[in-house]
Image: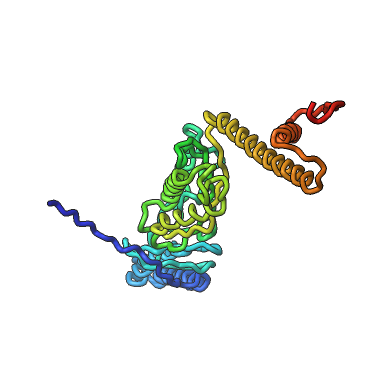
Length: 338
C-alpha cells in the first residue's frame, strides 16, 4: 500500500522591527556627501602638477558610490501602512510605524500589491479591466509596502443553485484587512487574488448549503435569515483567508434573487401561496364567527333549530363571510320551514 507523506509547512509569523529615523540619516548622508566632495577637492588642490594626491583621491572615488547607494535607503510609510523587509531572500521583519525612515539600501524592492492601482473600467469587459489593471500594476513599483487599512471586495453576481437545486443569483461584499504581513507576503502567491478567488468559492458553497426560501420548520434560508447567513459567510471566509494573514471584519449579501429563467414561475408560486394563506385565515375567522353566532342564539334561546336548519344557516353564513362579491339578501315572507 502506497503512503503519501505530506510536508507540513509552518505558517510565517510577522516580526515587527524598527529602522533608522529618516531625518537623522538624511543629515548624516549630507555630511558624507560634503566630506566626499571636500576630500576630492583637497586631493586635487594639495596635489602637485603631476596630479592629485592618490590616497585621498581614491578614497573619495570609493565614498561617492557608497553615498549614492545609501541615498536609496530612504522610504516613507503612511498611517496604517507597513513595509516587509527582505534582505537577500531572508525575512528581517516588518516596519509598521508611519513616517520618514531609512533602511538598508539592499532590502528587496517588490511590486506593489494589486489593489494599490485601481482601474475605472467595469469588470467583465473583454480586454478591459483585468488587462488594463495588470498593465497599471506593473507600472506601479513599491517596496513590499502593504496597506493595513480596511478594504472592501465586491463579489459580483454569481449564478448558482441553492440547496433545493433552484438557480439563483447571489452577490456579496466583504470587508477585510491584512493582519499578518508575513503571511500575506510569503504564504500565498498573491494575497489579493487569493482573497478574490476564495471569496467567490465561499459564496458559492454558502448558496448551495441553504435554500432560497420556504425552508422546513426552524430551517435557515437565504432570504429569511440574512443575519445568520452573513455570519456563516464571514466565518467560512475567515477560515479560508487566515492562511493569507487576512482578517474578515464583515461579510454581507448585497444581491439575492431567483435566476431570470425561473423568476416568473417562482413569482406565481409566491402569489398562490399568499392567496392560500389569506383564504385559510378568512375561513378560520368565518368558522369562529358562525360558531359564536350559533352559540349565542342557543344560549339566549332566540331560535330552536334542528340539525338540518343549523346546517342550512351555517352554509349561508359561510357563503356570506367567505364570498368575495357583495351579498344580496333575500327576504323570506313565509315561515322558517316553508
